[in-house]
Length: 214
Image 1 (tube, rainbow, N blue to C red):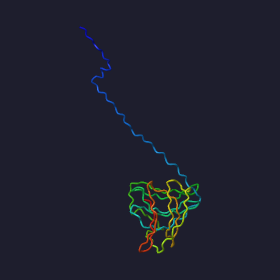
Image 2: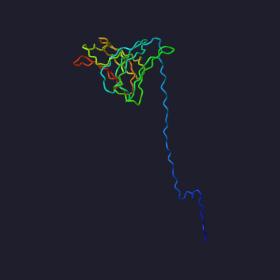
Image 3: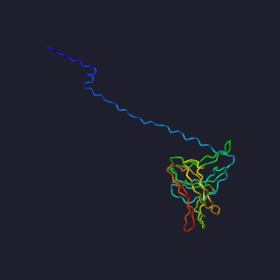
Image 4: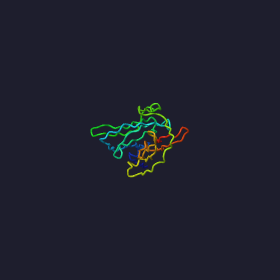
């Protein structure tokens, strides 16, 4: 009787009775740091801004709106007054940091205002902090505003694609209707919509409702 022995490779014998587990590859998220925004060219002039104008803070559109006081900016080779208005913060708790002019070595530099986040909740008692030259009241007038003026929008003067054209309108100032020229303005956030100012006729007379971003 002849016995035959079959020799199996050691590798196959080692695999007998073994379970081979395949490790799944875990994909980790890759975080890419956003590029910093391009630097903004500072406006430096040698003419100081005039004193702030006296303003009347008109009716508040809602309890969430914050009064943004008027200020002077440099536009078209001269100081241009941007009227105060009610504005809706981009998020609850945001605080408005007012624009300002700083006197530096080369001249006067305009620092634009901005919304900044904070843990404090802005309440009505702290949203309006008028200076002694600002009165808080509703201003009723007997005369209706004149028809709007015809304005020419020059698209090439648009500062950027994000800017929105704010149409001109009449306000009541120093006993007469005064025209506020239209201008380009950047929304406070991406989805903001500009609600135009308007005059409403009420039993006491005509009252001006300031425009605002919503």
